[in-house]
Amino acid sequence: MQSPIAYPEEKPASDMILIVDDDAINRKVLGKIFSAYYQVEEAENGRIGIDKLMANPKRCCAILLDVMMPEMSGIEVLRYLKARDMLVKIPVFLITAEQSTDMEREAYQLGVMDIIRKPVVSYVVLRRVQSVIELFEARKHLRIVVADQSRALLEQAERIIQLNQGMIEALATAIEFRDKESGGHVQRISTITRIILENTDFGDGLDEQEIENIALASIMHDVGKINVPDAVLTKPGKLTPEEYEVMKTHTIMGEAILQSIPQMRDNGIYEYACDIARHHHERWDGRGYPDGLSGDEISRWAQVVSLADVYDALSCRRVYKPPIPREVVLEMIQTGQCGMFNPHLLESFLTVEDQLFELYKDMLELEPQAV
Image (cartoon, rainbow, N blue to C red; front, side, top):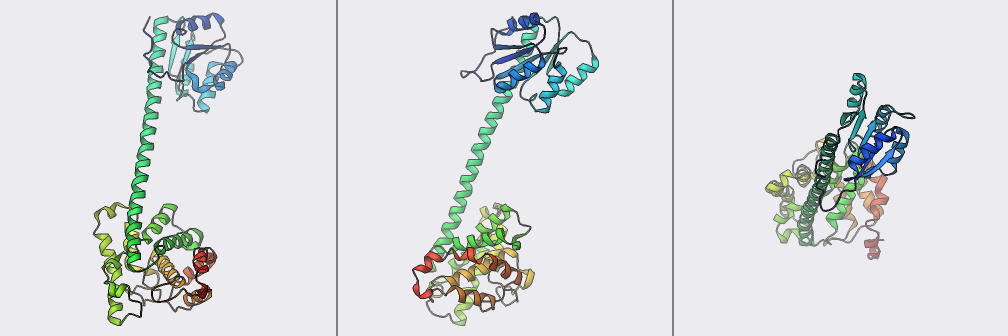
């Protein structure tokens, strides 16, 4: 007789062999072969065998199945298990004296692991069954290891994504503070962008990941301001024409900065971020900068960030002005006082503006002059 399986220190939960045969003597013979190594359960027909199996399927490491039985034959049991995708988890062996080619063909097509002829030879059937059980246990262990490793890789990837996002937000926020802003501007732009794209038909055709990438990319819209001199960037009064030309360069410089970071090129936000940085001051009528794009020459994401930027700038205190009342903000945007916007975008914006205004309520409560 062969040596028993060398189990690992922690014995697997699958430690039971189910013997399904209408002949009590056959069940006892097979049970005696395996009882030294496994818990043995017996069933006198296929129906009872299935009931015992389904009571605790994870415990069963193999099924020894007679073919000709009352109530439910061995082939019928195989069909039942096949329909529930259980034959890939539990190896099944037909124990039979039948010599039917058709029966064997169907059994193998259904997924039986082996067909063992009666009368059985104890050391042969033990070794054949044990070898397959070892294979299934190894496969199960491998699946667990792969699942654990995949989970660890996903967690590591998520940490890297969060780190990258944190670095992007930190850089953008540093630029905000240099621009004498409150530190919440970039987060509000990202939130407004996401809300418009997720909740209006202006975002139709963009999937969830694309919208997430665009919202994150919007954080970098003013990264080029890092190259604008403080005297211009933080000037409390109106800019001279020469100073305004200097300020406008932040769009081209923003794109150049992003293009100069090799690690950005493999990030899903790269193309969006470059486009938004350069084009978030373009206008629908072609009177924006730096390229004078008009209409649909301006990408949807750049259009949304452009409107979000104007809405936030008007709604918040800046070094050169107090916050503007909500009604006036909406009038200025709709009448083109801050540049022309896509009419479709304006319609979409207005359908969610109540939701967007929630971002400013607490802030404006501290600004009684803006109410």
